[in-house]
Image 1 (cartoon, rainbow, N blue to C red):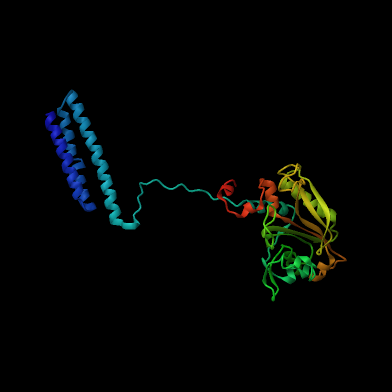
Image 2: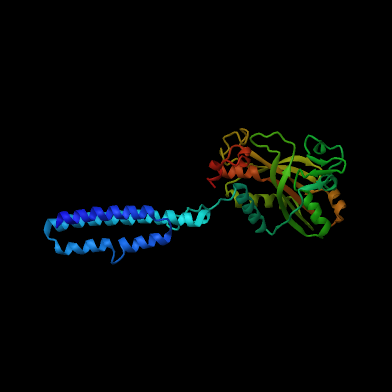
Length: 341
């Protein structure tokens, strides 16, 4: 009996392989499944013979049948998948394949920082204002009391789109304050974040494209002490209570008196590094009390109202927070850097 069952197993395997090779469509394949693998199929008939065997003969024959069953199911599934792909063409989708792992995208560090800066100033009552990146010379210079012939209007600093029409890429976000004051009476308390453009040679702390946030507060009785308190409160909320700021006398045509302000370097903690140019301080931007001449352009009464304005470079603050030593790294789109955020 054992020898006869072995022969029948080999013949069944051979017949199954031949039938499978000749199957040309899914309908023919289904007939093969019923004939060989169905509940009353040829393979089930051989398993029925096991009941008449005993001992070692039963175990050996059972092992051969189980091995054949696994093989027949495997090759049948492969044939079914192949014929299914042929019948569906390029639109075939194999639901048995494992799915792709989806990766959550990350915000650029500058985007994250801009949101945090906005949140800090909004908590102090400032409103976010927007303005065009393509400006006229009037809004970029004239209305900010930057006279013709001033070095800031030199072609080496400003990117002109149309020199004859006096159309430029804005060199700062300060024009936004003029647009706002033209359309809103005091009090005004705004920040204006956005991209700016200058003909600058890229290095560790300079870029021809950069982000700036302009701040403006105009009302009755606004003083320089209010300006200092606003900058200090912002710096401590964003960078920690141990951050230090310093103001240095300076000159800007649109503010009087004017100052430049610096934050203590968080990278080297004052010891000196490439970012702070070995000084322990990182220059952020300029600030001061709004020049009465600017109020004349927008129709504000300089005898009644005073105000302060300030700017800050977002990239330089990001370098302090994230410990990034070169501003150019923000624009290289190196995945190794971006993955850290």
